[in-house]
Length: 625
Image 1 (cartoon, rainbow, N blue to C red):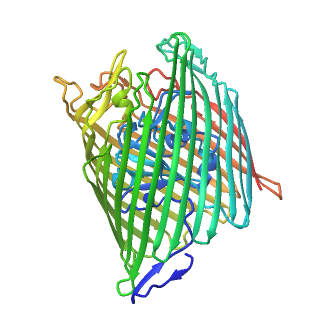
Image 2: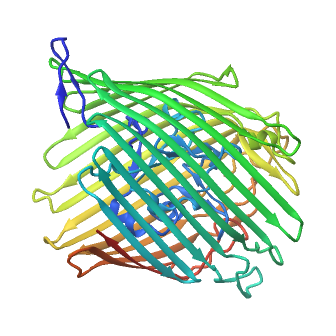
Image 3: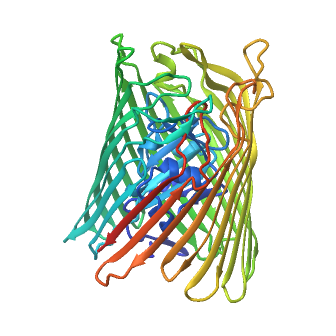
């Protein structure tokens, strides 16, 4: 916990530990809300794969994938992609023009901590956070040890991967680098709409990226760090099922930077962040003579303070948090205009934890301004209560209520052609009830955990794109999201060498239109397009003397393509087998990994007319020093 300091007030203890060098404080203040994170061994299995693949196989979050080399976006609990956030060490990564983040362009191996926060927390994470958030972070580097890791991979369809990581120290300085490069031909076979076998063309991928970190420690409790992230993706986009051929090419570049300062003192944890991000997208289609450049820029800064104290009489812990973020984004339009969005804000939170951790309460509030005009106040609150806390059984109840609000993005307002400057903001309330149950036998060899979450959300003026040759966003009057999620895990230690595990995650989501501004709208009472009602995954396997065997099975239910449910895609099941085992080298931690993706050779589409690969193989060799 670090050192403990006492101030001059009797009966009050103020604690200050080591600096949290990379953790985002906002995402840890989530009393009453459901959050999840991925184990280190899981991240190692997916190090050469995108976060889109990780989430589609290991979480109940629906990943809306437009096929090989195309965009993949998040959908939490039936929310739209623009209502879900991606945060890198607390910095929003959603493209400020599109309002979404293409997670097919984010490599899992670049991060040692990846988590999910379900449900909106707009008061702390910012307006626009309606469905949930993907949290990207890193474990603090050991200041007393240098580490190096190298990995080579290969697979079907001409796949080649290489990644490297390193961390080293010099006096008060710490340096880190994580990088990757990959290439793929993606020339897989599939069945077209007539049942004939085809092979994808114009589907090559070339990608590379790296994150560099420099940290300087003024003392044990004060540091300054700089992160720079650059990546480049060249993607040939294969034809859809309704096309005869494709000459489409897209290049995505991103340069992201984050400078942050932390100071842990007897009067609290002070922090400041400065970030500047540039996203460059070049799209070409030589057949139609299309050549588009899209450059968006975003400046983000934040200053904040967190302080915890406890009273000896009650042994309760009180945590206070205040921060003042500012976000500024702009794009250059073809007509010469440069629309922008300026969003300063101030937010605060109070968290109470009873001395025996039985009761937890939290209250949040945020006031934000858009281009000088205030948006509605965004309050929120959460509660959790430990109902049973016996030697072998723990049972906790949770609940939260959050107000949500999302202003239209620059693309929704000003895209040419198709933008709609008359769009109204989305707004509503998130409500959530949940319980956590954990049990283990007396010997501790059998461990069971079970979580169930019920959520209910109504959003006024939901934004949805409609059209034919030209698509335009419109406001639906009201959309109702509700459903149930479960997370279940069972681990059994057969002996000191053998551990069996099974995990089951499920989601049931109803996301229906309640009201519409359009007369005779056939969407009333119908499921929102591409929001599956049923989805889930199973992971089952074992570890034996360092060997890991895991079978992953995912199920995705019906997805309606149209708002009136007249066209839909069939459910699909996919299976994936992962094996990792150590190799006998004394001076290095060496592991060989083998994967079979889509082991049952399932023919499926996540999005209509965009075929996904059949069975393929991956192999990788990693060396840690």
